[in-house]
Length: 184
Length: 184
DNA sequence: CCTTAGTGGTTGAAAGTTAAATCAATTGAT
DNA sequence: ATCAATTGATTTAACTTTCAACCACTAAGG
Image 1: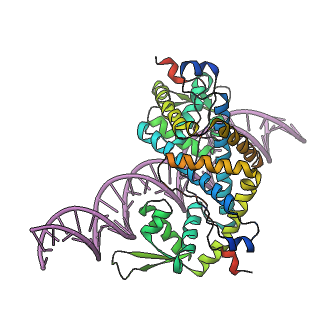
Image 2 (image 1 turned 120 degrees about the horizontal axis):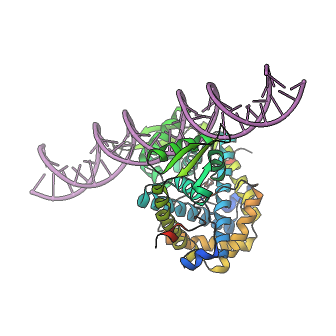
Image 3 (image 1 turned 180 degrees about the vertical axis):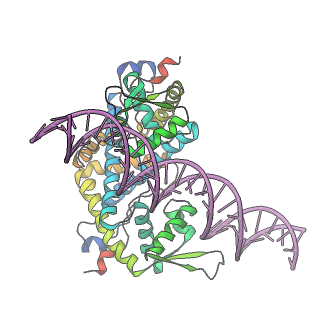
């Protein structure tokens, strides 16, 4: 991800001329939100990359596969659930295949189809990586916020998400079946 | 930006085995936040790109330059204030220079230094683009949230930002001196 | 069957980003 | 002065993402 965003300085006289400009309170909140969010997301990304050598994008692919029956998904389905183009996924899977993380299999029923399957190495990787991810989400986000504020945030962003239509974009999902279970 | 992130499915049995796993409420809030945020940021990015042909990164560069005295900044300063490497900024400015948006000037006092200056076309561009940006921030974020919730969000993310150290990462800043003023 | 349109996926080139190497100018110590 | 270390910026190459073109296969209609 590379996200690179910006914030907002606000001066009274602007307000007079553009009534839609943000007022001081709005500006302060917007700025805290956007700066905090970007620092946070970058932090998660850096940790994942430093500790496991994978990007957020690859992490997400791993999560989806790890949750799927047989740890296998059709390319199209994987692309959709990770919110990326088929082209991009194709390149990503090629790289991961080269690294022994996944393998491709042809799909019998549909001659056009291709399956991506997690290898054992891939499973081991997501088991490790999900711990890093969960730790980050807790340490920098969940554990920092008061429970009632967290609830408020959840409700507010549900509305935001709705207002944007159902582009269920996703980030840093944790595996549903916690991979760590099999380790201990 | 390209940010590509992921969310978190949570099941009770995971909780028993990993006490640090998110509980239902935490998981719901986290998921709403991360999905909402990513959809939102992508939306802003797409609008800026569609309406003005610039990325968030370029938008940020424009904002900083438009706010600076003489609409001019040293490369190093510009890189720091837009949270990017000097290398990346160098590439970005080269592209923008090719498009007539900025020009480089050598810095007399320090023989090593280089100034980047906004051209008239660049100024006209930021005047237009900042309106798109502000509209998006209002329409999808500020106007969607109750004022008291917005305040809560501001405070929560201030804490998050602090917890991450001062990496003042920034996104979609609006120009301080609203460029639109000179148009009417 | 045969044609046509649509789906699933890959490919290659262009554009953008990152990381390391390079280079020139400045600073600071001797 | 001189030399080493540092700073400011660019360059190069590797890597990732995007975009458009493409190919193989399926589905639907005559």
